[in-house]
Length: 295
Image (tube, rainbow, N blue to C red):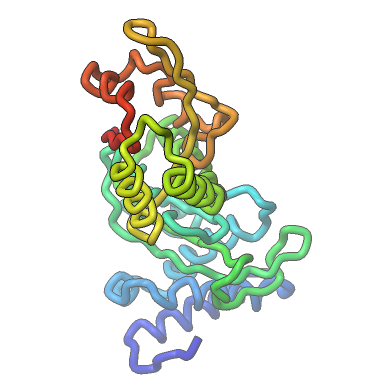
């Protein structure tokens, strides 16, 4: 990172990094100081300029200590810093997250916080290359935009002091991160299923389906797959019966992304067609290529 000495926040960040280095044991001092500098490198300047270097240092040190030792599991912490325990305080609750870097993290975390009626006041979110030995940080560097980068997030939200509420917030954020990992991890396989559906419609469309509809359906799926849609979940359903006995059954073993069988989100998506509105259920019985529903 090339420092901009004309940046009014640069001196405060540099001083904060020195403070962090002095507060850590010698073997961790360089990594912690580098972490502090990179933590604030792209943070909103207006939110840094008005904060004293000591507080900046302690904020960075807090999440560095959280990130210091990690296996593959995400780290999530929601707490209220105090002068006695942390050396600094805030009028906000602090949420800290360390996770493998991947798409949708910030939007998903923010959405979960907002869903709970809470406001996000500040997000500091660097993506860093944290070199680890046996899970412990030994070196900190800028991101390489490749596998191994880690997302470090410190979110300042409306203050909440109830211990149970904070624990529930942590659990909710962990569940959101599970969903993000599932959607991102299964993305390529979901696209493979789209490609297979396009091939089926192009080469093996059922005789009951109008050829023009089949071609339009294939074109529409190809358009979606051309970066016009984000695939979050996939699951197959088996249909049987007729008339009032027409039923669908979810094949949970086929689930991908948010529709993986082991995700809580999959439990609230109905597996029986009786859970659909009458008009939607009737439409599912028609020999159509695509049915688009809103959830």
